[in-house]
Length: 294
Ligand code: PLP
Ligand code: CA
Image 1: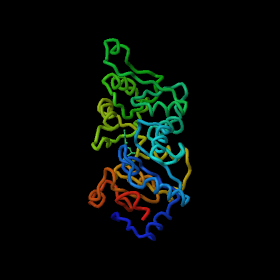
Image 2: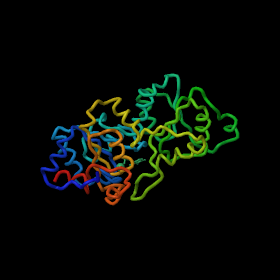
Image 3: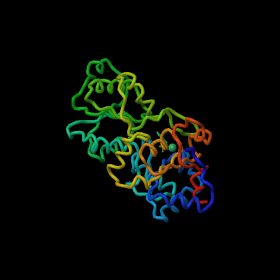
Image 4: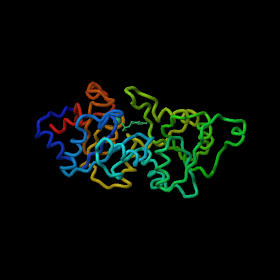
């Protein structure tokens, strides 16, 4: 069925909201754009909470921990509990500890930023990283497989280097070392433009090893498994709200959620939603999230 734009009629908006007990929100492109809060985001979320709806904030951004995201939300004037936030650094940590059940004596080699380290530490997972300087003659001798490294986890790393990749490659040559990516977004929007995303950091490792990482970001169902690993909810009474068809909307559809709502304040356009062969077709869409207020 093609997607349809929700009319602003109060009874239609109320009927749509009534279908759900829980709303999963993508963040950038839905609630805010970069550093700018989108119009009436605070009122819209407060309205849903007043109706008794549960809210979750589900973001592919691996650079920040849940605690940092909570602060970001609160600084925007959006009250939230840390348990309502699922960032891909957190879903990665949950996956490693609760789905993979990585033995305590094994380590994770991380390519990424502080958000990943904070979430791994909070789950009691031992990790190592690399400071990323130039590769030295000693490195060529010392780099090699390490039985203690059970997982290589790759997220966005804005200080990526040959040395970090070379070390990951040595670990991944062992087929028993699990290859994970926080998310595989090719790009992400910032400062009004697109910049290389976490997928561009894991791509060289895919090229070197011929292996495909399990992604813990949307649209991967491993992210849904991680959410369900810590939170029980009726999926049929859940709605995914996102700006990107190939990540958010696909995540909601493939995850078996009861509904999907796209907004036009982020990456995907109305033309993309309506074209034949769209990456994923949302049930409904709105120009902006706040249009749900009528
Ligand atoms: N990755 C990074 C590094 C980002 O900064 C962002 C957005 O801020 C994203 C991914 C996409 O995040 P979201 O899933 O909230 O749109
Ligand atoms: Ca987004």
